[in-house]
Image 1 (cartoon, rainbow, N blue to C red):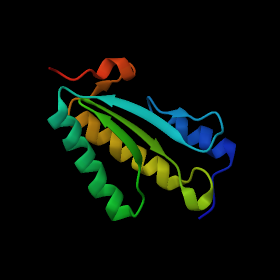
Image 2: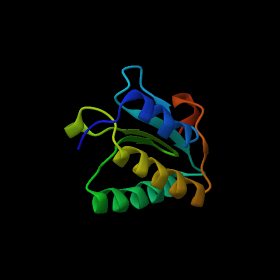
Image 3: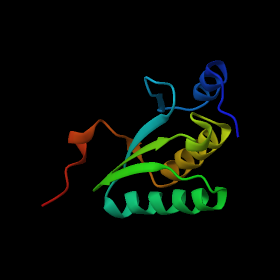
Length: 112
């Protein structure tokens, strides 16, 4: 699998909302915020099942109600259509679970 050229990456990125391109152009990322940990974990489960089926796995980090996702295709040394396909799956799963845009790391404080 070959990495997309910068023009292809920009075209694919324009079709997504909330995803940002890393400074080096090799990955895209997004943060999601959910009502609680159960919804965040449900999101991760939905995306994990799709990722396993596609044999394309995200890098992610979860703190309570926030999930940070980063996508790239290591084998290709950059971004491929697989990354943008999984981003679309993640967005659909997040929408189904009522995610709101995450505002940053300090936004995810866990309850006492």
